[in-house]
Image 1 (cartoon, rainbow, N blue to C red):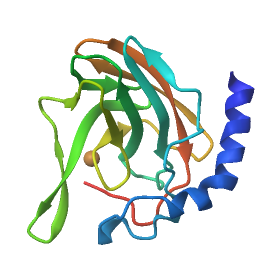
Image 2 (spheres, protein in one colour):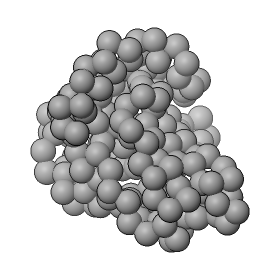
Image 3 (cartoon, rainbow, N blue to C red):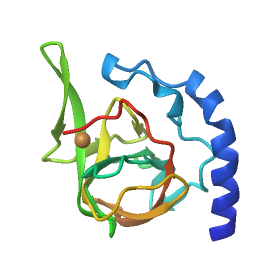
Length: 176
Ligand SMILES: [Cu+2]
């Protein structure tokens, strides 16, 4: 699995430029998003009950950065909604679910205290410029090519173990 991940990682680096073309239209803050990855083909999707998690990645952080962003696409094959209520990682003191909201003309991020609903039969994408996982008080910078263990917790599906693949940093990455 480890060597497979490496191969996938290398392939992804080569493919990240073309992914960027399909990336979302981000706010001005997120410009220079050539390093963004859109999530497909990064690792085998992980199934947990009725949920399928795919496209799990983080961005490399600059030296001294205390926070990092994590991204994942979650599909719910159930007839009932589930809810992402939190997460944890040995790489950070806490993992929070954040959303982006316009405050006047400024995009700000905000903790989703009640978690994030994954609608019945729906797919929710946590992506740069939008809802994301925030790794807070990083133990060490996230380095491109690293795999970072991450556990997400859902109200119904319970705990799901993932590996965040660390992709390139973005010079205009978000900060708190
Ligand atoms: Cu955040």
